[in-house]
Amino acid sequence: MVNQLSQQVLKILTSAVGEFIARATMKKNCELIGTNPEELSPEELPELAARIEKSVSFFAGKDVGKDVAEKIRGLGSAT
Image (cartoon, rainbow, N blue to C red; front, side, top):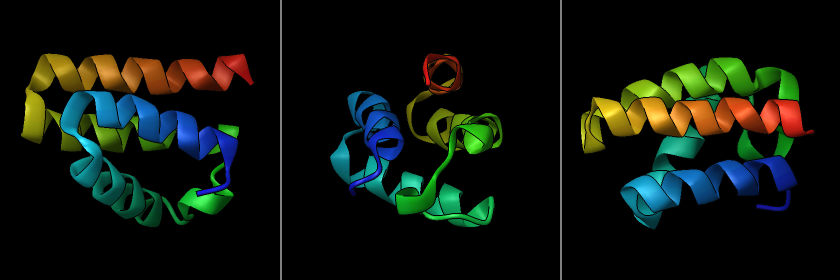
């Protein structure tokens, strides 16, 4: 994964759910919003964060999902 933004999202996800689930979650949720991790743009972060929040909440609980989504949304303002 060369895209810097995707790497940052993956790092946030990995800290919450582990690398295996993080990679699968990233790939699937990017597909659901019509992109892929290599082409992820800052404009797509809000929608991606919302979808990832649901996925992470399933694996790690609602509070963790919300925290991860907030961190991902924050990446958009940092770029």
